[in-house]
Image (spheres, rainbow, N blue to C red):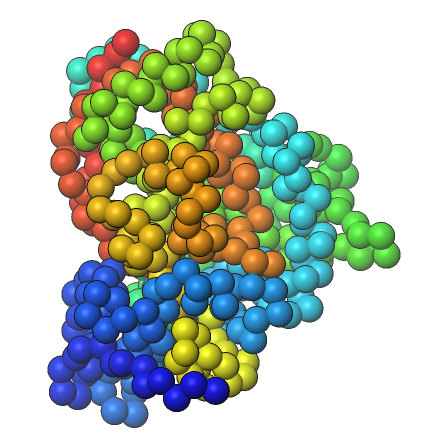
Length: 448
């Protein structure tokens, strides 16, 4: 095995890289890649309480970690904290449990099944457009509007008629749990969750409220026979060829995951797609012209996606610049190597889509918005993992087709109805469990 020395990220005495990671982790990772290379060791915190991990920035490194049979698993501080909040669903389960859950849930996310969710996406988008009626020339918070929209979509698809009643609870609880989980997962010092600190009490209250909501809806649906077409009913009914099924707690864990990932990923793609179009009027015009040509004023269908190729490229480029999961954590099961660097067993490894998506080896002028990067002939020149906002390998996001379908359908409907003018030219972001906007993302609506 290679003995290539892994460079250390810069830091200060005693605390290492803790100050840089707390100040702006995403920029710290970009600097480390630029100054130290594609595999960099971070150490943060005082002696005896340190968090240490290897950050991996290359496409080849991501391929090594995410490929089938790779000696890495979902471990480490962050995933332990995520598991404590949303249970042991597809995101956090490992080994045989993950394989079993994926086998049971996969039939709900086939392309044919996902295409059947388009009607709900269109109707919720119409609700958003109805709410904008009469607001020509007004400024709206695009991030908030898109989060509301995608949350309505996912609760409708999950819970059917019960969906709208769940939205206020989710809006109230998830932000509390997101920030608390990330803070605990990356901190060298973590107080026991049971200690009655203000942060722990807020998180415990939010978690209890969210669990009670899901358990109540699941119990009501199960007692009614779970014969509906919503995802929850299908989760309750699902069986494999041996008759195996998800337990009630496993159903709840999947529901919590779908609520979190099912709205935040797409809300990020939509809000930053609209922000980028608003700050690049020519690309917005190209998108609008394509939508008008392909749809001719009618509502979009899943079958239209191949013809909405520029709109799809806009969504992909937004996810390149603003991946919803900027960091993906793994832990090494055994001694291995990445790009010639020794990775001892037990080492925590952090893949960095945020950095890889800006790596100059794969992207020219990486900070520039250019949807044509995703023309087929240009995509063919890049490694598979130069772009991986949905992860990859056997643990790739099960909902990636749903997210892309929703993003393109919604973008086509919104850009047909309105022109978007940027009020905020830049939107600062930070790292949480998911990418977190740190400032407003406002646009002026101009009715067409």
